[in-house]
Amino acid sequence: MRQSLVMGNWKLNGSRAEGLALANAIATGLRPGNKGIVVCVPYVYLSDVQDAIKDTPLALGSQNVADQESGAYTGEISAAMLKECGCAYALVGHSERRSYYGDTNESVAARFVQAQKEGITPVLCIGETLEERESDTTFAVIDEQLGAVIDLAGVEAIEFSVIAYEPVWAIGTGKVASDQQAQEVHKYIREKIAAKSQAVADKVQILYGGSVKPSNAKAIFAMPDIDGGLIGGASLDAESFLTIYQST
Ligand code: 13P
Image 1 (cartoon, rainbow, N blue to C red):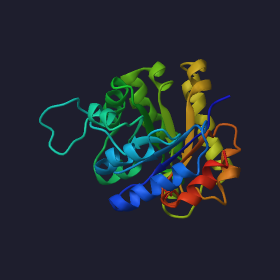
Image 2 (cartoon, rainbow, N blue to C red):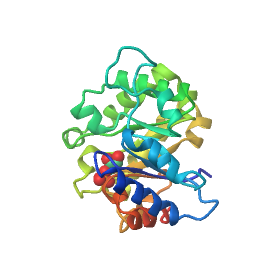
Image 3 (tube, helix red, strand yellow):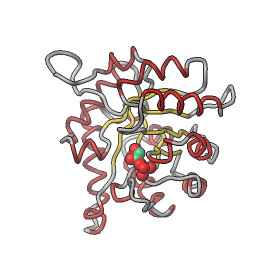
């Protein structure tokens, strides 16, 4: 049985005070022994949130990580720096990074490797655009996005990662993939990994992301290959985020 996992991605939202209030409100709603709940906060608030949630079950993640270890890469944040700020997870390859900031399959794979070198669990985000879905290339896109990481890091590395399937057309649009649509792709991802290692496929957590809300979370999380969610908008409200967490 895989541990379920619910992650909030705050994206480019909130002030320091709002972030701290949100983290505190989420942590207050948890009981000792709760597991599998993470917030991915803006870099500049990581240390503040780290202090606020220490000794609580809430874990911390970043929204990206550099594809290099160190050196002359102005504006980048390394995995070692994130480790110091208490990050247990780092998102890599979020579709907003891929589409607005030029992250490629190759650079995403390099980010994945950098995170793992520091013992940070990379959360590999993959998913197709509406155009790709409508032209029946969803599985080909998944093959390329997942394949680039497996080629660089090896299938065994996938065991120590999380995969987030986020169809681009469902992110922030209110258009959620149906339970069946999501399950179909999750099953495909797991089978793809199983073709190289059944043991890894059985263990890896695969999250769904894209317009998950308290009203639809339970049905999505009930699907056999969906192990939890990566939540954007609804993670900015403590009550909504906690309700989604309690739906696992
Ligand atoms: P929404 O939940 O706002 O659709 O965002 C999903 C997402 O991109 C999480 O990373």
